[in-house]
Image (cartoon, rainbow, N blue to C red; front, side, top):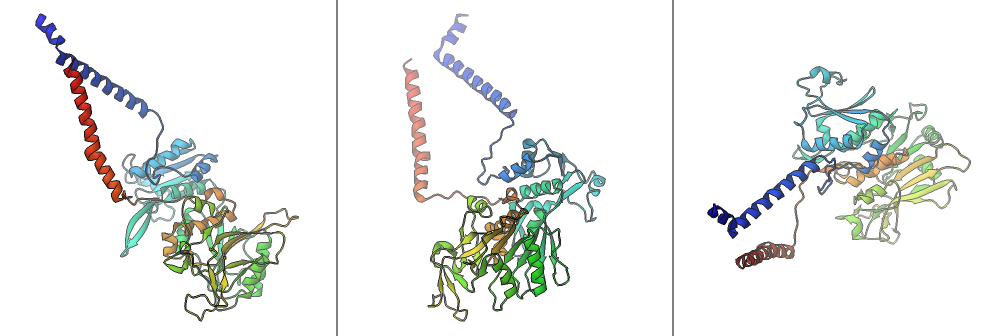
Length: 473
């Protein structure tokens, strides 16, 4: 019995027992904390590009929901993409109006078939957004944005929030906005990538030929005119004027032409702007990319460009011409610059001169590349007439639209501003590109010293101190 008591009086056994008890207590505390935290519905998104977070625009739309929305994920619960599931959970955790249902299309083909209106089939992994009688199908392919190398698609970014929020807006809106695209004058129309994004944001797009149409249709929300090569007839001009004078909304993308288009220019002059004939050349290196013709304009203060500026995006305008505010115009007109050049820009007016040297007759800047126009006479109670006029159309073509996010956002923001829908501006895709940690040689040296020398030295000194104290007890 005495030996047993002596064993517990031994310093090694005593300190060993204390250590074991402390370890057990710490483990128990960690288990309890983990169980408690797991019950708290609070999450932080620590990813660099906020991969799992929703935008402020989405939260505003969810705040304004007044009807139930059901999101049907076509895969078994827990067997889909974990990132997509986490994003969908953000919708349901924020709003009790949004519900999620998981359906395996293989096990329930009949359930999926009732949503397949065109008979093309709905792939596994797709999402179906419903509210009342309205349905929006988002294919699994459309949940991602792709880039192409040697005609091989590669996933570039995640578009889940864009598509799902767009689907919610579609199924909860009474009607979808309609854009009419003017045809018959060599216009470029709307490029495929822009059309795809407009579909996501629930715009309906139709071509319009004013030679055969009696007028711009009454259901037109926006008239879109992109790079006409020939002029309007007088009858077409009159139809456009009638539309604009009755609270019409329009976007003009006007490229440099070697022919005259007086009827188009007459419409623009009626709203206080004109097109300066010439090619803008930028001399400030901070305002062009690789070529003085590839302009990176200033983003001014306006609802259209503020979201682009606040998210550190930029626009790229290749081969642009200035949009000039006229000295003589109606007092009811408010003309606001959107994109401007630096003071060092100048305008080449002699197109026979192929050099980039400024000539004696060339005009010094700065210039407006794009403007927003609002016309609301004092005695006019209806909605104002609004136009966005841009001295370039190439910025939404090909790689400029897909690789320069600011370009696509600028056009879409213009459409949304014309409709008074600023809250739907600029929901950006989430990049899936892995971000590398870039360190300077000095940072690498400092980190190496800390890891290899400082931390081991601290541990060693602490060990000596503990050993010394126990040795003298």
